[in-house]
Image (tube, rainbow, N blue to C red; front, side, top):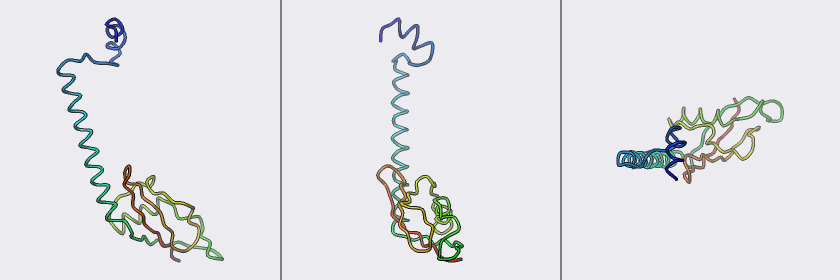
Length: 128
């Protein structure tokens, strides 16, 4: 950018920094830390996906006449059961259900742990 624009607008508002050796070094360190964080999160996601892939979660629910559940089985309930049964903490926003679960039976769902890392599990809804 031009000197005046940088000196009068960008630098006073802290929208930019002067490109000196210290600032460039800080930028390199920040990028390295970001790469390391992404790498460790990806490894953890792969480990969790391997531990849960192909497994089943059993949930007990009450139903009325005709086997129709009172309410439905939600992603939050599934995450709580995964934590109880397998000890893996999963965020409810990462559970992808195709349809609402409103009856007894076995249903398949995906967990998107990280970009490109997913695990397919099933939930078995049983009578309480």
